[in-house]
Every structure is written in C-alpha cells, then in structure tokens.
Length: 198
Image: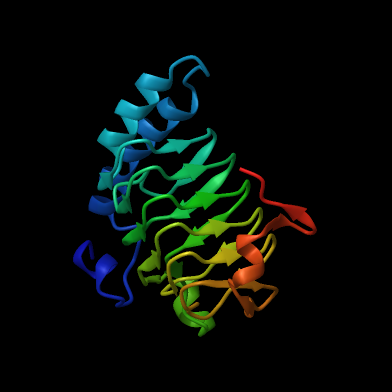
C-alpha cells in the first residue's frame, strides 16, 4: 500500500503501516504549530526535520496543515507561506525558489474515485503537484492533484486550478484560466496605476 501512494494507483490510506508512520509525522506538525512567534530559529530547524527538502530562507506562518507534515514536500529557497497553508502531501509536492502563498491556500495531491462503491471502501489515489519558481499563489486558491504551474505565475485569489498553467502568466477564476501574459506594463506599474518607484 505504501508504495502505491506515489504511483497514482488506488490504495487504502487507512493501512496500518501507513497510519503508524503518518501519526509520527503529525506529532511533529503539532509541535511546529504550537511554537511561539519568537521561536523563529526553532521553526526553521523543525521544518528541516519535517520536509523532504527545504532551502534556506523559507518561512511558513503557523498554523500549517499537511497530511504528512511535509514528509513529501520539496521546497526551494526563500519561499513564504501565510497563515493556513494546507498541503495534502500524500505524495510529492515541488515548489520552486521565491514562491509566495497567500493565506488559506490549499495544494492537494489526493483524490478519490468517482465510483461510490470504491469510495465506500475508502480508496484513494495521489498525483504530484509542481509549482514553479517565483510564483504568487493568491489567498484562498486551490490547486488540484497532478497540476503543474510554470515559473513567474500569479494565481488570483480564490482561483481553483484544474489544468496546468504555463510560465509568465496571470491566471484567475474557477476553473482557473490564463487572463494574460506578464507584460511591459507590469515593469512600470505594481498595482493598478501605482508606478514602481524604486
């Protein structure tokens, strides 16, 4: 069952061996979420223990939610996540350097069969998610299993990403669709008609 977690095959997540290992991970997550705001160094060390990979300069604002506490999450460097990031990390999630998550974002790798009889037996399948470098995932966005998002992508707040997104675009909506490419105007204005003056 444990190997099927990463192959996309149907499996039973309630398998005794799986649950035993998952529980140990969740204990670490509980401890992370109960750290004090002044314990920044402690948080950084805990994330190194919890995650499959995590680069320097990453910050995750508690509470953080993950089925395996990050065991199958691969973060690059300088990634920021605001409150209530939920990562259903039943299989691998990859996130590139400098990506930012707004509050209440969900990244899901797990799905359940449409056939009711299989759901009654609690079958599940997982598909990896890949998020590129320097993306901004807006507040409340949901990224579904198997999705790949390119580099430099802005996903609008509240979007539901059901299909892959190419690099260098702004994408919004439910289902999430490409609104436009990142363009010359974005080099001049940072928000509406406010000019970049740095």
